[in-house]
Amino acid sequence: MGPGAGGRAALAGPGHGGGDRLLLADLFGRERAVDPLGRAAGWPDGVRAVLAGAAANESMARSGEPVRVAMPWVEEAA
Image (cartoon, rainbow, N blue to C red):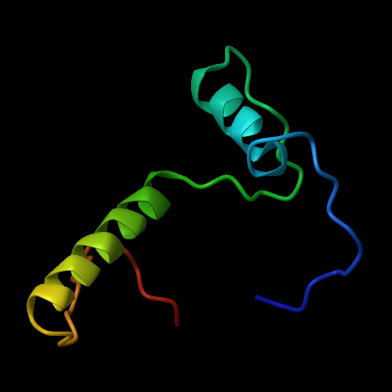
């Protein structure tokens, strides 16, 4: 990831600065909102998030030992 562009973020209301409303609309709305920056997460991102949580729980159960997470369907960045 590169450096940020700077500036101020526009808040769209309560609930995580409007993010809750946007997330709920994306999940349950009839039409998808435009994502000009391509920031929407796909299912591989969701799988990675779940595996990160599972690995953290396993690590805590092992007194903080590192845990290797295998994701054979994901190509590693070169």
